[in-house]
Image (cartoon, rainbow, N blue to C red; front, top):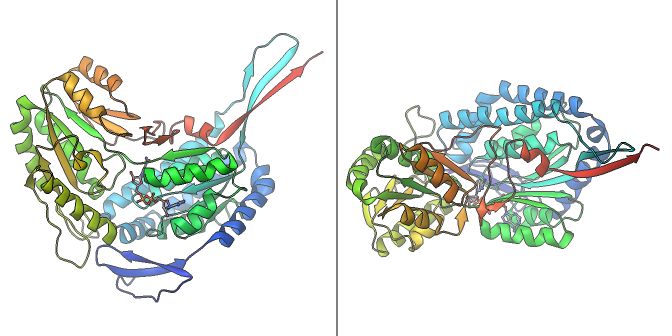
Length: 468
Ligand code: NAD
């Protein structure tokens, strides 16, 4: 692929750009309400037709065949993902491998799926049947296109729903390929992708009366709009929203290892992760030692061309994201925090930014409370356990958290006291298909991943048969 090809833009298309060189890659159709209508109709047709008629085993077989096809094209998907998002190609490859694993997991889960028999008396045979909703509408963001899409498509399709998916407008490439590679494996209409802007195709999908279940992943402010639109039709909605995750480093922690975790937690994917460890809460006794190690660990994250093997920090995903990060660096400086590492954008082309650390951050400041979605760490000191937990929880979000300690009792206690959907101990981003993921507070409603995500996309029918 010529990275500098410059296709023409028009009112009916959207141009996707390579953020590493700030140049167009290609265009995709710009769908709106009528394309969403057509996609919902196609999904309904598949649900009431061939796709809906498949039993558990047949659906599992189709999903495994699709996953195998995706594995055969994993290198191509990784290259597309890297070009479209700017993430280092090796990271993209790992995320794609992981994403396909989620689709396989839900296929295997179907084999062990049973309807529950409920004992209500010898003269009654009663059970709960898990049934798909019908047509599921999915809206996803641009930060992990394949991984986040697989997290949703695995359980949604395994549950038996047909899908209309709206990817983020800035990262359409891999989602298009996922759907193309399903052709001939999933029946026509089972998986539909409509590209378009959020307030056009996105709004049309989330307000569509023909959609039976919605799953939205994105900013909490957009989540409010989606929930409002869903309320009009009483459509159940799963929301995966933003985060401002704390990393609590207790005084007994392995400080050097904790610093490495802190760096990974904020610099992986240039900080464009919903679960990024963007607030580093450090005990005052180890603060100076921790900071030394954190600066060293940050220096190991190497900014460069995403297609170069040694690169671990690519560009921010778009100019808009770059400008947002620049604004927050100013907000940090103006708020009186100490800039101790980085802080600068790099000369273009491309939207590169230095890994950045602010020390002495006030937890009430905008830098500590708002989602930057960039490589900007905020270090905050605490004096004792109660203060650490109060600071960790003193934020509107509750998606994830991490703690560093060598004391197992303290680890369990902190994990119970922190209000977040996931707590990692001496680790960051430990994901696996069997582990649920989702938010407390403004970080969302419902859970993705894990066995429970299958039930997020199906409803229970109770059947009671009088045996007399
Ligand atoms: P965004 O809310 O701007 O957009 C997300 C998606 O929603 C895009 O596809 C967009 O086109 C669409 N959209 C925008 N307006 C819409 C509307 N009115 N109706 C329907 N759809 C609309 O978010 P973003 O900037 O693309 O993504 C970053 C955000 O996503 C961050 O807040 C991040 O924390 C969050 N996120 C959360 C998770 C999670 O699992 N909790 C995972 C990844 C990202």
